[in-house]
Amino acid sequence: MHNARMSLSQHATNYTDTTFFVQSYAKINLTLDVLGKRPDGYHELTTIMQTVDLYDTLSLTATPDGSVRMICSRPELSNDNNLAVRAAQALRRRYSLSQGVVIELHKRIPVAAGLGGGSSNAATVLLALRDWWQLPASTDELHTLATELGSDIPFFLYGGMALCEGRGERITPLASLWPSSMRWLLLLKPAIGVSTATVFRNLPASDYTNGTHSRAVCTALQNRRELDRADLHNGLERGVLANYPEVVQARDAMLDAGVPLVRLSGSGPTLFAPFADLASAATAQKRLHVQGYEVYLTRAIHPQQGHIHFY
Ligand code: C5P
Image (cartoon, rainbow, N blue to C red; front, side, top):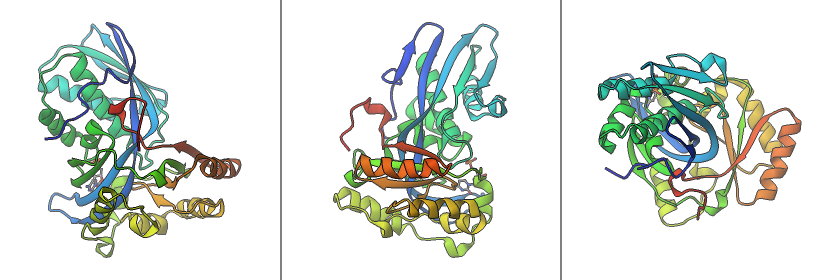
């Protein structure tokens, strides 16, 4: 098993006896091959994920009453179904704990957007509470809990760039291979939410591939070959474009704004566009912003490595 982010203290912004602040990063899917449907109803995937510096902030406060409570800046997420609450409850159950925690969640990552926000929050809670409560949880144990909570959650125990297989839970880190031609990432979130389950349910077998796109990109990254449009495949993109006209409109607006390459992240609806230089990315961002689009200028980030990155 590879090293997960062993400690969150490096990027906790404050640490006291009773409150712990921590950042929880979004991801994009650089590639996504859907290999086929499995007997358990999930789809077999081969995908390359990368964390980006768009993040939610979680504040964890000890509570003496033994409860787990969520207060979210988006009230519709302030409930026990929130993956962050379920992650805390899963740890309490697994280790028979009586400690309670109030989780305040400042949401910045768009919801139901293909950016893994909820999954990231859950992984962050698992890592933070393991540190804070000094639990004897090995990386493998945390990985098992994460997999039970959701397919994307194990990736966020690692962060950075990784090849994710199976349901998404088999993780091979691809350390520091992010290409310089993709130094800046423009993310555009169309004004709709998309259900991952619906996208997978509607996916025809004709959109299945055998994983070659993701594996070819791994090889290209290892050989430091620059990636082009043909390399970046997302097997969910055709179906999402066919069913959500808002995503087509947003993609066309990005192309009209001079973006060289646009891809869907995960099951969408967020689209991403890589840039080698900040000026071009910022110009495109401004053009899209004045048209009323929700756009974020970000970059690839490895949370474990603090604030200096050598991508
Ligand atoms: O695992 P998670 O709960 O995040 O997945 C949400 C939904 O997305 C699943 O219920 C399933 O319908 C679909 N999914 C899938 N194959 C995957 C991951 C998710 O079909 N590998």
